[in-house]
Image 1 (cartoon, rainbow, N blue to C red):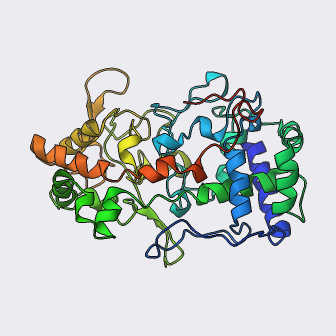
Image 2 (tube, rainbow, N blue to C red):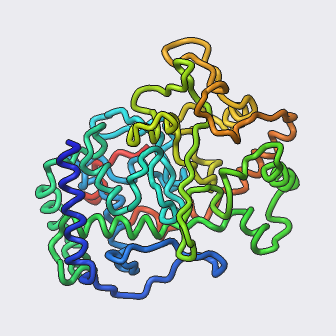
Image 3 (cartoon, one colour):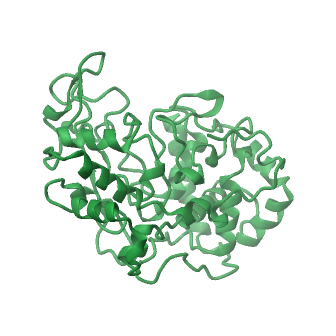
Length: 389
């Protein structure tokens, strides 16, 4: 499968150069964000347009992209949950168990590294190939069914009109146009209107509770060290904007596991080590943004913390101790653990205040914005058999 997926990636790359200038921009794209924030980078071969974003939104919610018509992108990325699914690990076609917690998609266009532990997954357009055609594990199960799926989409009156309008020089539905439209929609998912934003950037003093204001002070206090990794406007050190001189690609071992005393993580969950083979990369995973973290439980790459209280208890101890079972070990003693994970002592009220601050990062407009919601009418073939979280 890895060889076939590589071939698909190569096809997408080769198509880009030939067709990059062919995508018609039927209307200027206006980023849904305040002026103080720079837009995310946009690939030269996939300029944004309102029509392309709208086409991508229809594809995102369309379960006909999967082998049996049951799994859409939205089957794992639920808008009300910050485009996560509420499960510890993803569930794919035929109830196939995944190996990672579903990451949220808020502001995903700003992230130079997109998945939990693959440093090579740096493009939304390329990344969309993994759920569509990957089989390790199966997510949408479409590997080898490309022609059937494109023919299925071509029979829909909406797509029959939309694809030629958005890609007039490449009107037939294919891998290039589908992945470009999906990438454009995902890049449009901007979340910058939480109570904290209104307090911090718009001067609305009453937008935050007193507990959240105390929690903000604690979050940025050296005693807790939260802000060293969850830094900046998106609360992550994995960031790039159109004004960035360099990409920030933060990833860390936070001491979740230490199976053998030498820092081992569970099989199939070894982080960047899986791709680099460098022992120092064992257990290193991308820093997630904390935007909408109050609605994206469970947490960590494997969904092993059910609540924010559990997450903070993990960091307070400077690593997790598992006392029995196959993954037993003291994560606090993991030799590859990030030096910032030093532990802290905090009162119950301080923990409560930090959590109040974290929940102030919930952007209700983002979670309910119709522009990001399901465009298909009830009972439409695009969603008739679709499974949702």
